[in-house]
Length: 158
Image 1 (spheres, rainbow, N blue to C red):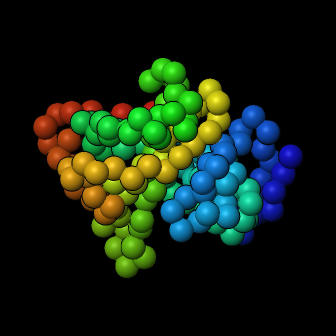
Image 2: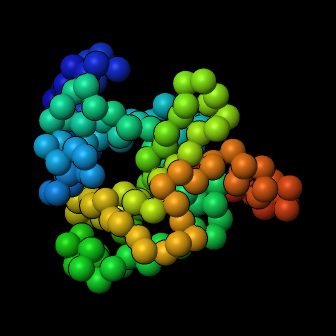
């Protein structure tokens, strides 16, 4: 299958690559089907491209790439909606915002992570009540703080 996107041109994908967000994302209720695009093995960043609206794509990152202690408490209702049987089948991503004027000030939305059941290929953007997490969490600052403590952040963003 293929889709012509605004950002990447024509992209080939397989049906088994499609992630379905039945409720869409906050502010993007009409976009329900997405694929994850790797931008290279040397970066933790990926793109999440809408298949319903080719002009919509989000930069995403796994929070544990820069925040080793990220452990969101996913509400029971969200876990049920995602049909999660085992934590092994769950991936969590955060949408990244990059200011044009200063990319070093990029932030991640840790308060509204994208939780994905990898085995069932369904996802949901959840809203956390945990005040440790914000919608504009500084990525570079957090990464540097980890490095200064000798903690090696993960780079596996599968």
